[in-house]
Image (cartoon, rainbow over all chains, first blue to last red; front, side, top):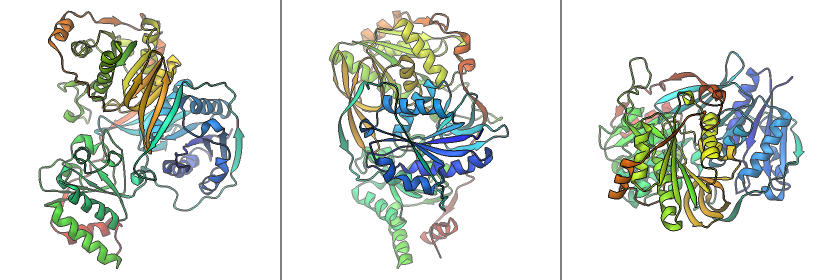
Length: 332
Length: 258
């Protein structure tokens, strides 16, 4: 029997499929090859008519099938409704692997599904592979990023949530003749949690930290609003996103949405530039899987240099304007 | 109103050292209460004050975890339960959630609200809370910043998501996982300390809560660690002194074109 890899396609409040889905889609292509050319399918749970509007994304990412649950009640995420849909689908199609983005929604939904299906769920992975026995080998950091653990699951489906930004989306389209299969939820679910109101955050779009290839981040060392402007300008010059340490957020220099670390986001861009950030573990757990790290700090003993590839000991207020200058010359 | 707070003892991850064999040195590492569980206690104690709730604190762990439970009583929790059994060892989130839910079902079945911390800083899975809720067949709200309203039958909470804040009304019995944001001070008061000294911590084994040995611990866990290793060292940090050198590195990394 052909094996199947199922991926959850989270629809954001703004109505598009969350970027982490496309990174999982790319990884699934690789896993499918190692799994005797397994088929790749997506699960989307959304309001009526929505699936058709985002179909192109599935076609370009090599999906064989899309299972769509559409219902007026599915316009906003609800744990009980959404998990019921996923559980019903898995019990019908029996996928080998089921992957979910480790977003706030994914991390709320995942354990609810896995626990109902009596299977395991490896949380917040940063690497996925198929081992010699054909099992999903999911690797994740623990102990604040100080230990990596590769985890296997003896039940099915083998489930994992995966950090946004860890895998890259496909560079070239893999066009498939994607079949959309509409499903209806058959169990009667009367949700006991009700959405009363939604207050939109400051950004119109999802903060692009999740998918950014370059992140420039500022900490307490950026001192004031003017200092933080430098972070923003440098990010702009590099076409990257702006992050912040908890210290900077607590000083009111940056919005909580930009916070990276234990109480904020976890990112793993191609390049992370830490400016005026000392590098406490609470911050580094959110960024230490970045491919390259450049640290700028006045204190040569700052722990950020322990994890950085490149260090600059000096005043961020001097070096950043120089860098911005240099970068803007390049683009002229 | 009856509240159960689930807490966990964790190694202080800021203080982790390596043994020569590349395993984590567990001896001599200080155990602390998971910081997010402190927020859970704060949330519960605020509800205790505002709605006259009774707060039971619960943990699964070794005998030493009693100290942490006594601290919870010292800051105002009413009573404490320790789930301790050698058979619980090696549990993943599936088995842990099942065990804790099993204990609540058999010993604290008349609860209204369960409060957990959103993450534990050692495992950081964020899965135990939802797994407990699922086993009890009750609703959950995760990433809770604030409990805005609490009545006999429901709570209104603020949930923080990527795009903003959701206001959600959850019917009891329910479970919430909380983030930082509850400012109730958790300093022990004198009478709390006295109470904690005399407090009897009830301890239950798997048999006491009606779970088979095959359902708990390593045996009851669908996942297992096949390999644990130290993350690839980034190598030494190369120190540079000028803007030009930074740009050179950016070129090397393929960020800048020539």
